[in-house]
Image (cartoon, rainbow, N blue to C red; front, side):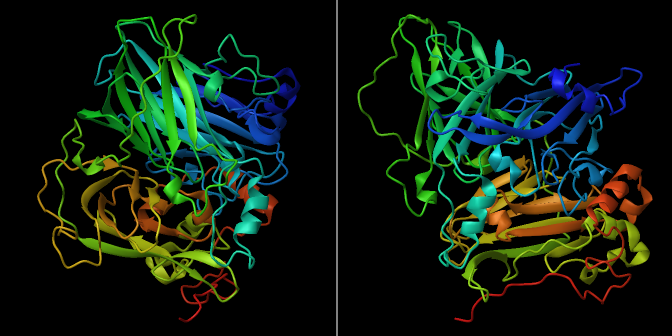
Length: 570
């Protein structure tokens, strides 16, 4: 068991009782607080949200055969939460960590004990981040590795590569400017820089010995100060995570070949790749075999997909560079200038190692992505012309308290869909926006049943029908859909719970690009084991925890529920 803590925090953390008195499993304590003067990119010190007095928050690693427990103490000046992205939380949807949906949020000075049950069906590369007030933009984010009893592939070493865009201004200030009447075009905040850093064995790799960073982040190597140590002839697994808020990245290593073996926790057949595109919230594992030559060290590149930005500020360097080191005294290899072929990963062509045929769909949810100037003068995001507003009662508590009426869809927000237990759902997402979007479904991995390059086309080469009876379609939890394109995502409603589905560009989530699924609500009630402290925290926040989305014991009276704004008529 590892616990990262500093002496000054121990009186707070000591108030939290251990869950694993018998020692079975792993238990950690996180104290979440602001940390001043962090400067990971070396360009601008700012305060960040860290854990146990440090930033970045520590990497997390555990076995899928054990219970994993996180005691999260909130020392911020606002509520917080932790979402373990990609994990299923089967039968414990209230542990999913979505503020306003699956919990009321952790009040300042209080602790939430997240329990991640042992699950033999889950392993691979994940991450944990706040799902409240965009706090992960300010730094509350960390990689997570879940280990199976035996990995599908053999390798000599295992590193995590953390990518992310980085802002010098705090998220709440940026969001207020983004969702304002002075920004009717809806231009997203552009990052000030990007970050790349590495982790192994539960710790971040230090800076290169010939560099001397200062401040709270000085113990971790970032960008040019970071390096991966390779030994000639060894094969390494690199778990690559995009933990950013906006930018996709293109990742490659000069002089080395990469082979994809995992995507979003799904082991796949080996798939060679020269340049890896990684959208926000996606994870890939690649195998890289080291060269048999220590004469040179080699550059690692992580270049932002600047086509996502309305403008590229002249001060922004979108191309982040780090290195692989074979010999600390060797020079960096200099290759002749050449054009890099940027392209998206064809994830639909990846083949899972575990075979799972495509089932026949029994229900369709058809969503079209649109952005528009709204009646209040702001620019908002919408699915099917509806922008998301959080309910007054977190949805999980509505599903638990409405008894038989929990199956009535209109008792929830307008962006909600009630699913029957074991429905086979075709989730069709049509991107009517001019930019690409990464969409994440909580509580499930979906099958990529089909993709279309142009969902409005009558040309079957551009908008092909779904091929049924596929033997083994790709499965993942976050998919990138280009402008004008669509994807058909099929999943089985076999995990009773309340599950968010949203664009993982944080600005677009805040602008309303969200729906939620209430899956088998009567089964949620049957498995109701919500800990009492969750209701106590709702009381502390003054958040209602019974009734429909507006807090009424009714399926029709939604008075007081926030709605709108609405698109300006064209």
